[in-house]
Image 1 (tube, rainbow, N blue to C red):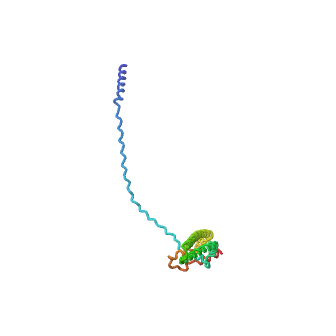
Image 2 (cartoon, rainbow, N blue to C red; image 1 turned 120 degrees about the vertical axis):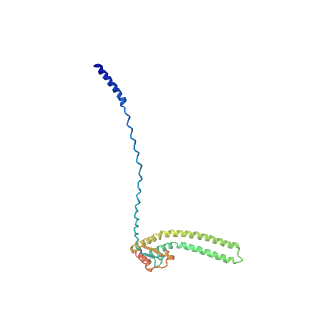
Image 3 (cartoon, helix red, strand yellow; image 1 turned 60 degrees about the horizontal axis):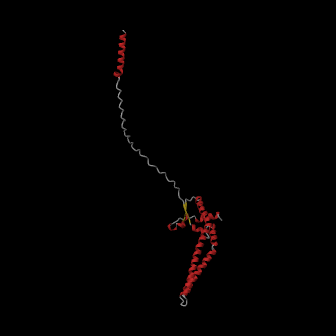
Length: 217
């Protein structure tokens, strides 16, 4: 009986030993990965027509244009008193310089007259005429230098005295236009070659001068 058990046990051992060998199975084949689907082109949507932009109407105010003649501002009788007084003040300060320049001009003219007179005389030496010519040229150089200096001094003084008043007149014109509903005021003295006709009602020169003089006596 014991031998049968042993043999059976041995048989079981052999069978057990043979199970791993005969029971081994092939590993399952890996599933083939699915190929990604090719991207389909996105259908092009038809362009939606955009409405054309609507231009906003320009807000252009109604125009009311007037003209002035600024040359009248300096008229002794009909002009702007404050402006005229300032200009005269500057001119008076240069009376002495102007007198000196006029004196030099007179001397130059006298020398020119002498040269013309002596040139016709047979007894006058060329040296005498040449000396007169040299003197005349010297006076001409002096006159040129002094005139340029006087002009520069006058312009500087004019800017200092008259400049602020001119600016004030310009500002007063702006205020006058606003108070009278004027869109634009043109200086007709600068436009005369191009102006063929002007309605006299457009000229506010005298009205503006009267207004300015009343506010600046």
